[in-house]
Length: 100
Image (spheres, one colour):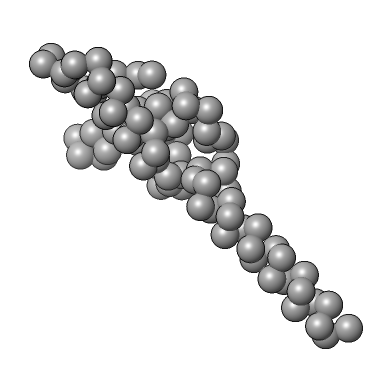
């Protein structure tokens, strides 16, 4: 996993793994951060606070990808989102059947 933007001095291997696991688990897709990443890739300048936020977002996204999470789309950003989407699909299908 990545240790970008992380002061690793004084951290044990277990502590470092906990921090990186926490980053990975807390990552959620952000359309705003994805757009900011596109702007930076195209040579645009961001404010210092936006650059810092983007750096942490990208690090957490890398950590999430390193743990095997699918970080390619918003629906795949967190396991709870998948469960919610599945529930909505099922609920919609049941509602459609009841109106037939």
